[in-house]
Amino acid sequence: MKALLIVNPSSGGEQAKEFEEMAEEKLREVFSEVVVKHTEKEGDATRFASEAAAEFDSVFAMGGDGTVNEAVNGLAPHDKRPNFGFFPLGTVNDLARALAIPLDPKEAIESFAVDHTRKIDIGQVNQDYFTNVVAIGMIPAAINNVEVEEKTKLGKMAYFVSGLREVRKNESHPFEVTAENNGEKTTIEVESSTMIVGSSNTIGGFESLLPKASTDDGKLHLIYLKDTNLWETVKSVPELLKGVTESNDVLGYQTFDKATIRLADGATIETNVDGDPGPELPITVTVLPQHLTVYCGVEKAR
Image (cartoon, rainbow, N blue to C red; front, side, top):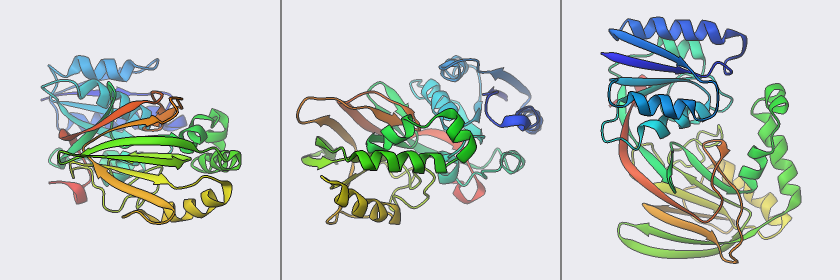
């Protein structure tokens, strides 16, 4: 069997080289051939994974959520898709949390087992793919405005600090969502500062934000804040962090197979996809059920 290991050398800090050597050694215990490629610029992981789809049995990524997302974008369009695995070196590591992969890189490498796999859903936003989340409004603004130095110093807290800055701006938008669920269409019109489309229970490092969601339920999950002023935002956020299972006075919740999201006034705002800047509205979001076979932690293996 043949495996490709895609390494983002800018992830992992001073131990990056050590982690790479550990991962390569671990993979050589299982695969007869292991090829290692280093990313140098944005898009490299996508290109490497896409080129490997026809020839390799498995593709692995070593890096943060952005590297994982790039590799998945390289594999998802192909009819023949190798198994996908990854060793998390990022700040948030949402997919690792959802798949019970240890967040400590050494533990993730040591615990890898070739028979621990499951099929997971992949989301598609316009022409791109995601494994975890599309966020619109206040949250992507907060994420996209975090400086690299701030993230290095504060880790996940950097996003919280940036989020507080965005809350103070008190910006809401007239969203229009047309969703399809089991062939039935519904339209939602709501004034909101934030919309989140998730494919698993874990978003932004919070492991129970969407308690009903799983990586293979064949659905995408939409949550949004019903906030038109600062006070409503302040009330909504704590409810959001408790976990959302149904709509209430301050939050909206719905599952769907496909949805188009736009602003009713024709304006556009930025999105964030798996932690990186995504396309501006309008967007179409679709679930691809059990589209990719991934290596996971033993608790999630099927």
